[in-house]
Image (cartoon, rainbow, N blue to C red):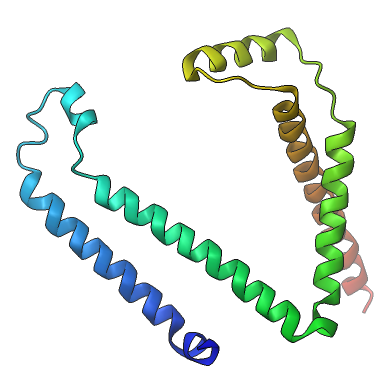
Length: 162
């Protein structure tokens, strides 16, 4: 199975995607003539595009599951070669945990106003845990950007002297 997917996986994925697009267009194009004549509220309520949206979600789910399974397969088939990647992943998790732990839940009045507007419009609540997750994610992203920038400069200097 693995060798088959390595050899034909991209063509299979492209073919499946193309087939879904053709089926979607075959469903939408014949029914699209009166769509623009509908009032705006009825346009939003139409189920005309549901198949395309549902298939996009299904394809994303399939791709996610395949990515995780093949990643695990690669890790367990070559543990010695995967050590660097696993260490990198561990460092990434450690950076996120540190960023999450050090994030404060105190917000400025402007951000609190935005949170209140969001909670009212979405009828949901933003908890302290959510704020810490967002702050931890932003801090992690900034740390990774800084590391990438410094690495770029350091390796350019090293390459200059080679």
